Length: 370
Image (tube, rainbow, N blue to C red; front, side, top):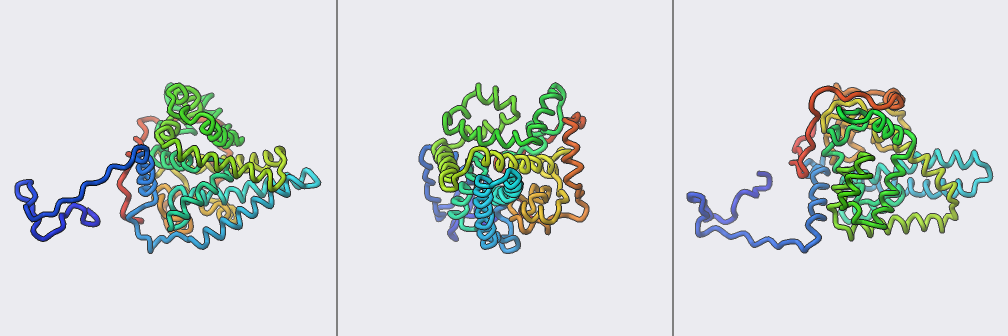
């Protein structure tokens, strides 16, 4: 085992017939975590797995200074565009600001994605402080997004998460409706609304009626089940923080509901368009079921290589700046637009045969990076 965890310290400690020799040191009794902290620690361990602990940090260092600079620039751009959209003298200026915001806020989301994997900053305190701030610009709750995203890495392209196809016994119409929610931005709307539901009634996520009713109908039942197991106090406080940030934006920038909605709906459409285009039509494999999409260079820069999604799914702990190095020569590299436009045709029949099984909740991290 790595790190020598299986070896007792002390030269006289030997095994005889399954018994530890008299000279062996006894390991100190482990303290049980206080009630309520165990789920939180389990979540942190799962995040550590998908950070890629055990990989060479020297080979794939977190670009901390670049991340901080990009975060500052993207947030300042967000603030400027939100203000100008609200105070523009003409509608077309508001529309232009909304389009610009749809890209700059995707940069903030990409940094949020890094923080989810523990890859925004090597100092964990900074990483865990930045994550809720980035989440507030979505707006969402950081812990909810972390739980959901790590669950996505475990369930990708399984029967539980196959949004572009319909399985035997499933409704083509319902699956096509889900796809159009993605294409029109309504998929984004569900996430802030879910955050408000959590703030108003956090135990709804632990309710069987909620999980098997609205959550199942929208295709989010496994995500809601995961969220329901998280410690309520921490998640709820992060939700209050998000709400406070959004209220502060309205007050400090003197925003109007119409301009805010224009900017955020444009962002929602832009963000949603990428969220399943990088998976639609890919192999039914938890790790290989993604694409390294071809983007325009400027879009790839603004999205921080988010389009290299297959490389990310293979090694989720590698920071965004190193993903181009992990693209293999034989990997397919489809263009974004044909897959995106193909989604407008609706759900297609799932390939025959059983789908992959979800990964275990705490899989062993891969020690090697190709």
